[in-house]
Amino acid sequence: MKKLVWILLLGNLIFFAAMQWGGLLVADEPAARIQPMLHEEKISLLSALPREATVVAASAPNISASTDAVPQPASTAGNTPVLSTIKPDASCMEWGEFSGTDLTRATAALSVLQLGDKLSQRQVEYAIGYWVYIPPQKDRAAVNQKIAQIKARGIEEYFVVPDAGPWQNAISLGVFRTQEAAQHFLDELRRTKDVRSAQIGERASKLKTTLFVLNGLDAKAAASIAEMQKDFAGSELKNIPCVNP
Image (cartoon, rainbow, N blue to C red; front, side, top):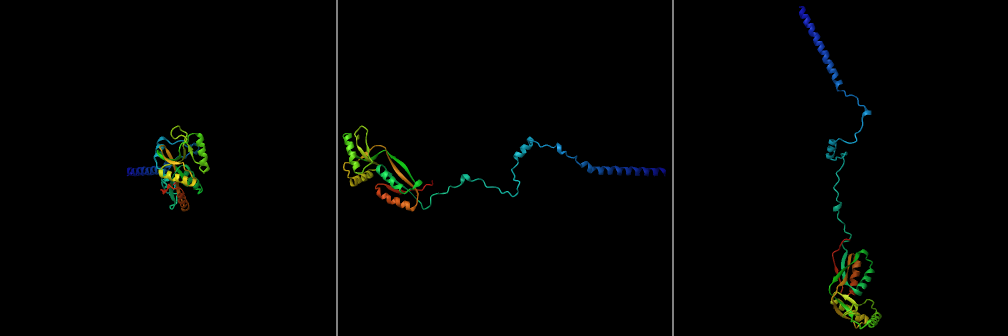
């Protein structure tokens, strides 16, 4: 009987001890999870990320911090269409070809309209042309006498051929691309200047003529030029495609 009492008492002691030890373990578990305090004075910022972190940062997508950001469309500066500066009802023409005194007259007539950058010129060169000339004079004295005569008749545009050869001392009054234009000029000289000694010949040399390019004219300017063209027989006035400046 005494043995049984001692056995029960010993068992209670063991049970009591086990309960107390287990309670200490449970009570210390939260404490075990408590982290030691940070010492702010020992914290310092690193000057650069480690190599592995740099690689990750470089490969990460650039995400805006704002959730309201709207993606911007790609730049289209290179594909922006150039707006036309020429009005739809504008006229574009080419007028020519001119050389000699006709070129001087046409230039003066166009300057009155003050077209600015709407007026430009282009040169056309031909290997063979026609000229209106006074035949070669026997010497320089005869040349000077003839020049005095044509100046008295109001002719200021001329050229004396200086080169040795069959045309030396001939007096050129104008060079033209076509025989028809040369003939018209000669007829005008005879009718208005009473020049009788001039004649037409083929000139086998390089001939440069001028074309006037008229871009973006309004109706009033186009009508003025069309009227002007009537004073230049042999010239051609034609419509051409407009070109934006």
